[in-house]
Length: 65
Image (cartoon, rainbow, N blue to C red; front, top):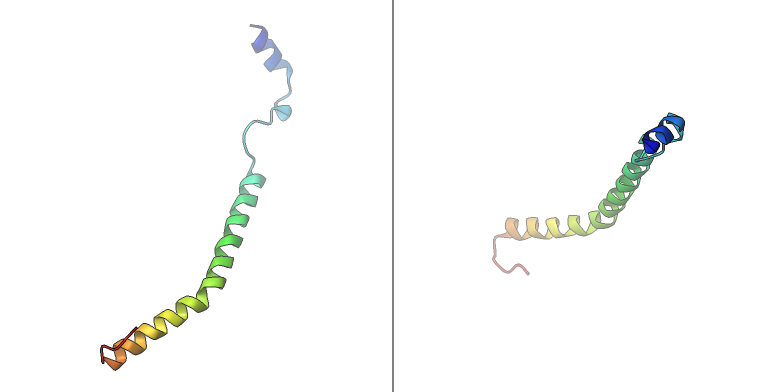
């Protein structure tokens, strides 16, 4: 009973349990930055690999690395 009375006395605005929308927004923004950075860094490497495979398939000599 005392716990219920204490809870009712505390204003609803002061109960800060759980994450807010701002915190979720910051997490989403951080994840987006990490994904964009990975795509930027790996983009040229992957482009080179696909170009190499394309040239190998186009030549059809079978001497591809």
